[in-house]
Image (cartoon, rainbow, N blue to C red; front, top):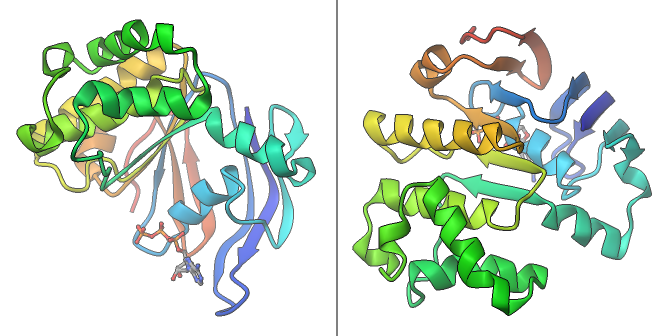
Length: 227
Ligand SMILES: Nc1ncnc2c1ncn2[C@@H]1O[C@H](COP(=O)(O)OP(=O)(O)OP(=O)(O)O)[C@@H](O)[C@H]1O
């Protein structure tokens, strides 16, 4: 699904070498952790997959085709097939949970008659069907993060990129989020999760890719936090 072939990234203004000669392959349906200290290159890695940033050298392939060939509408289409979850997921404060999630369907042009059922399915995956009519302010941080995951998966993306999704959460909520992401993965979505959370990586074992100062220093199929 995702292949990095000798990918390097140096940011033009500062000349920072964010990634150096990265080679890896993530298969369809995998669950992969991306770990590394602050500044190791995790967000840069995600941004390359989204084509928000271009590699200085090397190629990123999606389903066998180089992203460098994608232009204009194709890039927008590509991004729409990827769900994204971040540390701070801003839900629209004046919209209900249902409307926040349906917003993602509106953006991707899904027919309005399908919104109710699809939002319901996404809410069931994250276990919050009963909060459908709540406003974001009426939810805990952990619940807001689960709603953000529902919003990311309602469009049934092939790939989910999660960048520090548990960064603001306590250990119990973090574990719940991990379980939700595993559930999403079992339904067929490939998941790439960038995290600093050693306990999660140790507890819920999955392939773990370790970056150090822009270099891929370990790719462990059985997981484990090696920093
Ligand atoms: N837009 C940018 N311009 C210049 N340098 C950048 C830019 N974005 C990131 N960098 C630098 O590239 C390196 C990798 O940053 P990146 O954000 O990918 O790391 P990270 O592993 O996601 O860090 P964190 O865990 O703190 O989010 C860092 O040295 C950072 O300072």
